[in-house]
Image: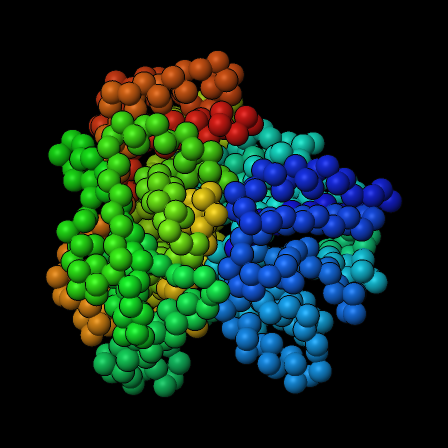
Length: 591
């Protein structure tokens, strides 16, 4: 788990070493163990390393393979690298290191850009073919590893973080009006290629981009699983589906134990409890687990320690609990916002940020339960989708924070541009073939778009802010492909995630399963009062905010007057949503 950066020139100039170095410094916390930079004429590559596999200098990056004529920078982990290494060695390839980085180089040489289809893991990488001058950029199936870029005539830059691109300079950092529509409508989800800044874009998940020496390029999606059953699936019993899911989940969890350092678990709910239970079945003893809680506000409880304590005691884990008083939360908010590669409104961000800080004091790798809700239908908006005559409208009613008409009232006069883009995006996505029923359509967009730019991005940003690698077994692509075939009624049973709950009953105590769905609750950011209200009001009434004019003044005044009275359909604070965007822009010094 690391940070990568690079610049490629197509105008006859050499790459800017200082710009690459600035990008690296901006993301140094992603890879605190070592760094490296390679300048090769028109191509410059940079890397910040977090040592997880092959702790020796032989796996340092940028990695150069003089025999094959390839250079590589890579962020992520290829869990099946040993099997691929054995296969490549049988072809005659010779290895000079013991990690997964070199396996990518050899796999690319053997199979070309299609090598990504063989990788089981998370990755973002750039490969430079020295002889042809070709550059290949790739991002994993669920976008677990980020990859941002900016393009100007004659030049392309890429980085693991958006602030890295900003730090390199010479980029348009004004707010993108189309991205603003998504941010305000889709609970802060801004899908690729957009980002909130005009001059910076991001690669879609499951994509490969091949860039020739003259700057021409082509991009393709290498993974797009169908949602629906095969002929054999139609006659499977519920019990058979459960056994298949359990077997695939065991494999996914076991894969993510590949490491040369200890691996722990972020313990928060049913999904992470199931991970702990499966690791215990595999013989893991003394496993480190971690959970977090916050002060209650407005009568809403801020922790779920009763459940994490139960699991920790049941399996005898080395459990660590972090309780964050409200005053401490306020002090840590600027750091959490600064760690966001893009503005993310979910309260879970600060929870992950503070929990990751604690975890990083003990270990360098954790497994986490993110993705289970999007893959196995755990959210409240899936059941109403089952009988929806208009799936797009049903989805928008449940998920969207505001429709186009309300959006245009809430935005400032210069930013009102119709507001229909987010709904059009969903409508186009729902119309694609490969997902027949409404629930499948919602699961597909959530697992391939929303998940990538909310929960997945949150986990990456907040853990990597402390040099911590997070692994997400529920986003194992083999497991996800199987889940996409599971009948919707089995996933919707029991109020959601029915089949996963039945699988969990075979592994963990039922008290943890039969509980209300929870998150990292942070009530102080939902019911904004006192110093939190002062913080947000100061940001939104500052000179910088007034000059931007993103939001209607009367709308802001209504929010300030009654912050707890404006809650979105997803139980989020409208005031925190608009305030977080302005706080992020000011933290990054952009916009």
